[in-house]
Structure formats: C-alpha cells, structure tokens
Image 1 (spheres, rainbow, N blue to C red):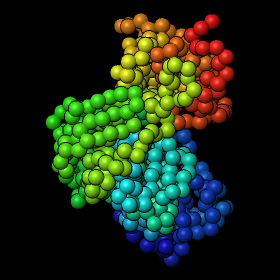
Image 2: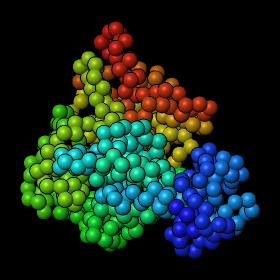
Image 3: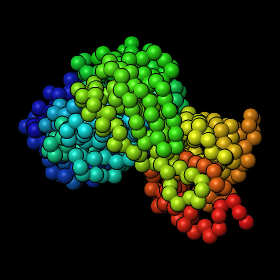
Image 4: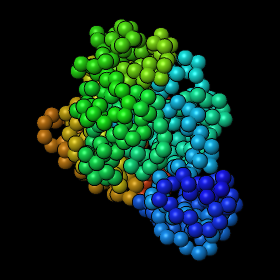
Length: 491
C-alpha cells in the first residue's frame, strides 16, 4: 500500500513526506524493519521505541509512524495513538484478514483457555476450519505454534489472522486479555461472539485497581462486539449486569446459581468426569464430559452458548464439547502415582486457587497437599490472599517459588505466609526450590491423598532473576514419581 492510503485510515494523522511511498509491512520491532517497512515507534512500559528509529532506518524502513512530530530523515506519519495505529495499519497492509473471519473472543480472569478449547472443538465438530490463539498455544488450522503472549501484539496478531485466512480458516477463537484490550492489540477488530467468564483479582500491578481492570475487559463488549453479534455473559458474576448494560449486541447469559438463558441442572461431579443437563433456548440437553469440577460446568455452558451464537447446531456443539478430555495445565492429571492423585493447574490467583481446591475437595480425597507460589514483579496484593485460601482448603501447604523474576524468592514466600496465620491451621512448609517442594509433597503423600501443584500449569520454564530455565511441573512430578523407590508416606 501507499503511505498516503495508510494515513487516510487514521483520522487526525499528519503525513510528512511522499504519500506515494510504498509500504509492504508494519512493525514495532526495529529488528524486523527491512525495506518497505513502516516502523511504528511506541513508548512501551519498559523501553521507548523512539530510541530505535535510526536503527529501523538503517535496516531499510520506508517510513516511521509516531505520536511525536515529524523528524527529518524519512517519511513520517504523526498519529494520535501509536498503539492503535500499529493495529489498524498492520491490518490494512495485510488486506484486513480479520474481516474474512468470524471472530469469537473470550475474556475474564479464569476459564479463558478451557472455554476457547471447548468453543474450538464445537466449531470443528460442525465442519469449520478454525484458528485458535491463547495462553497455551496458537493453532492455524492444524498447524501448531508456541504461544508467546495470551493475546499477541497487534502486528503479530494480524499476521496470524492472515495465515488463518490463507489456510482456509473460517473462524478464529481467541483469548482476549485485559492487557490486549488496554494496549490496543485488538483495536479495530469486530467480534461475532464475545464471552465473559468472570472477574477476580489479578493484574493489579498493571491496572491499579479492580475497576480499571474491569473497564479494560468491558471494551470487548462496548467497543469490539459487532452489533449483529452476540455477547455471552456469566450471570453468576457480580459484574454481569454492568456488561449487559453496555453490550453493543444482544446478550445471552449463563449460570449455575442465577436465572439465565443457559442453565445447568442436575449436576453430578466425579473424579472421572461430570454430567449435567443444560436448559437453553435450544431446549434441554444432557452433557457428559471428562472435565472435572463445577467451574468447568460454567466453562461448558459458556462454550455451548458461544457455539450456538456462532450458528453451530446444538447437536454438533455438544458432540464437539464431549471430545475435549482435558486442557494442558488445567486440572491435568499426572500418571504414575501409587494410590494417590497428582494434578497440575495454572491457578495463579486467589479465586482460581479457591475454585481448584474446592473442586479437588469435592472429590473426597483423604488429604489435600498443595504446592504453590506467586510470581515476582507482579501483583503483590494477592499473595497473602492465596496463602489464606491454600491454608483454609488444604491439609498440607508447601509454599515455594513460582517465577520469582527479579524479586528474592524468600521475600515472596514470606508475603504468602502472612495470609496463613488465621483460620484453619494446615500443616505448613516453605521450600524455595520448586523441584524440592514438589518432591516433598509426593514423598509425603499416602494412598487416597491428592497432591495439587498450582500456579504454572502448562508452562515449561521458570523465570529467575538472571535467566530462564527449563521447568515443567508435570515432567518434574513424573520424574520424581518414577524415582520413588518406596511407597510415598512410608519411611
């Protein structure tokens, strides 16, 4: 495209230089700014892209976009909002690929990943070719890629949409994080279906307070939902009414405890799976799933409603939902434990940990042994809250490192333990080394117990102060179980 055509896409922009300048790509990364690139200089949270303007020009960048006035050296597009410009200009150069896809977005604190997997399965069961973007993986049709962010940066996101269209995908299902909404990564997108799972304490290091966190989430419904689309909202959450009020499109609600368009009745929970009846505008249907726990009933309700909103027939949707036997790092069983259960889960907020431990307790173990930590350089307010939840719902708690990053692990463990002093007195241990902590839990487990390893889930790394090292809770647990030469819990 020509630079002048791109400028016309951004009301309020000012172009200095030749409007006929050809632009073949858009990037915010100066290392990718080759010939024909439009380099968008963004003032980020840690670095300022304006420091790399000259580096981009040396790489051959054709032009620069920035919120600052023009600087000499190459064509310059001054824009009102550089992050929004990155999203809109990336889409334009790639031929607006998202306009050729039915977009289904899922936002909320907990349940996003599982719900997107379920929606994806329902769409596939109806014969659609689907792209999936989220915390665990990116998938373009049948081609997999590692996920770098829950919601990719705008230029990367648009490239993935372009790949999906080229692969023949008709739908894209994506987790829409609060960061992506606040930082304009999804600017300009129009969603056929927008799903809200819940809102609990998380990311307050970025948003500052719960109201700001919610304001970011609500943008999916108030700004990005198509007017002919459908919002799917969890009526069991306190913020439901506020989202219903601002939704650009019609709303379906779902719930276990409240009146809603999609209701779960006659819920039967078990270690091997869950059964319930869903009553909805499509009638009453029996649901059987290998997924465990009440929170997965909510995820299934959300996915079923979203599938129907995307015009998937009810029977096809239910058939697809039944194919999902698990999601990586979400209440994932680790095999090989002699007589006790071992599960790994991504729960990294106090509410997510509460749902996880309540689910495990409902299954009737003799004892619950919980291993968890909190990430460094992230919201510190949740640390004592998670400690309190773990202490209340566990028989044994082993506090350990998560991803400590630049913080001293011992200090993080101390903040967690401050919340463990009241209420139920679980047996307590603090072990900085995560591998050692997992080993201690498995060694002390007896037949009938459940060992819960929480916080990192699907992650295959641990972020330390000066390096990132390979670390997978599931593999670590498997290795330790295979080495135990005597039955755990016996001397």
